[in-house]
Image (tube, rainbow, N blue to C red; front, top):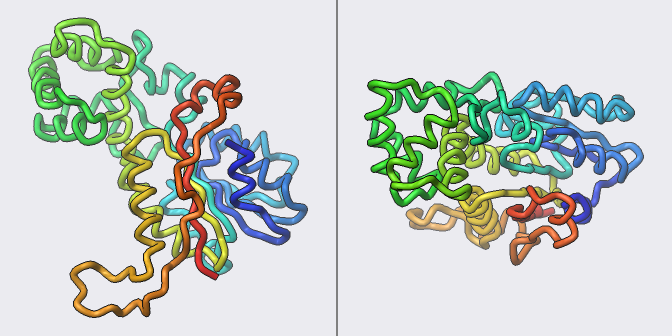
Length: 299
């Protein structure tokens, strides 16, 4: 959805933009191509993604700076804090590079290791989480992050299996899910469980919930924040945040008196979520679930 991103960000001369999930560098390159002397802070927690982005953005090296970090920590960057951002982009979820690298463990292809770490800062990999988390915690992860209706039964089966068997590959987790279902799981059913584990391993919802207001607070007046989400949990968090920031009164509901002077922090630019076109999905099937929302800070 590069065209939609550029139309919303509308990069300007001498602007300073954040690409908080730079990945291979495609969006950052589009921003840099759109203006002659704007600059980009290119952030990613994945060292392999940053290496790829450095190659992609080599022709723009004087106008881009790289930061190996989670996007929720990018606002701590001195330049972002002191100069302020003129626009920001978060393209959430797992990248094509991560999905295609079986050894990274983001896929449920046969024999893939249960890793799923997006970067070295993750507290544990998926295998360790499955082996060490309590049954209650596993059930919460499968329920909240995978919206799995059989979360408790699956958690119980994982705990049962780990006492006598190794849980180290995708096959082991799929086998546990097969027992709970009483049949081979569908692709959608496997995807829900692997998504849940990935979100937990990388603390993706924690990063999003902390990152949205942190980025907002270093945005200059008129700056636009664009977020592309890929599942309902992310999209709901973005939608709720943008709606809250666009209210005339943003005081906490328990506050007896309005102290914010009744001025919204900004406005939501996307009344309805934006989806990729049929043509884009045909070119890139992985974009099918993309949901784009945008918000502009008040001047």
